[in-house]
Length: 434
Picture 1 (cartoon, rainbow, N blue to C red):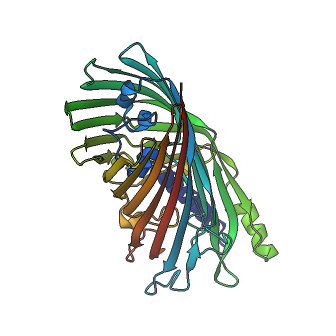
Picture 2: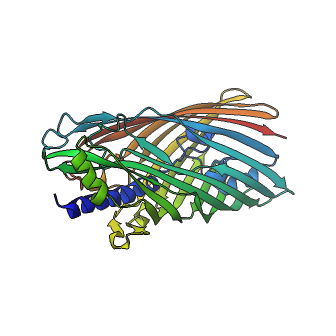
Picture 3: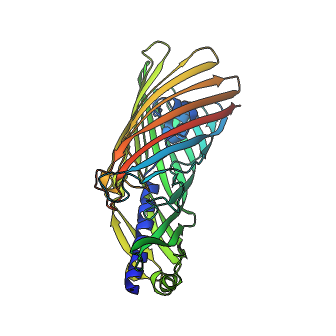
């Protein structure tokens, strides 16, 4: 058996794991950072009338003239499935799989403190990016050589200031975001057993990075040109987080053949070692317009631009085997999401909200795979809110349907089939105004 052949297989599949895993992490944002905003489909850049404005449009906190705090989070569940292409030899129509069952809670905390008549200080904690793709029955999942489990975790802290004119016609705000991130990825390495000519699992690879950070900023403006109209514009800068102390660990899996195991152990697998890489996060620009021309309703429409095209290439450097340093073209696309929402009071204390969203995905079909089975998304939302003298409670439910995504025989890893995904997001916020 050619030991060099085994070595090349091990390094090549490890490289694919590292690059594709990070691509997934940078490619999914979590836009649901407040229950009232989520109930309106995320169309909140012009309304921006609760402390979550620090995410959607920081200028909105200038109009909030009572010291207040709000906390809560979003509970996210996914249902994703894969069905192999009957026209493809592998995995074929028998290649079917589903996501493992997981529950994710994304926490948020906001506080606003008015200063004088026209200025407000705010402090926010949120997680604007992150997800997990964990396929059930990982040891038998047919796509386990591409990705079995991928995780991205982020956490942000943002202090902010906003100022408004005395006539309330104009407000401007700015915030500084400190974002931390961590990546954990797992997949399997295959090889051809020369004694049986069958593909066997020879190792499991795990990438685990330390928490690393970057700093960005966001700006927001709100303009009230007339009594029934409100315009909001906000921009959150792109970031790039460098992971300087990542590790790649290779754990051998017995093939059941001692002779083959010995060859793999001696010559095929690279050593456990450190790696360095980086993850780009896109900028987000919100353009929103709200009106109260419809009696008893506030209606808002937003368009949000995400610069995913910044993720055009990813490089990974191996500490001990620099000859295997890699660079992989990704060529993602900038995207737009379109959001429509409305809210109205039903009593002096209670209000209801409705929303809808259409969100483009950044991936070309060639790179759609087990690590990120992304697709254009359509969502509908609803929510209720209660306002007391001091307490406020908001709750929302957003259902997202991902359009069916067929790789059409174009997948770069020759893993072709159809992905179907739906997601449910339930957001709850509890607030207190002093």
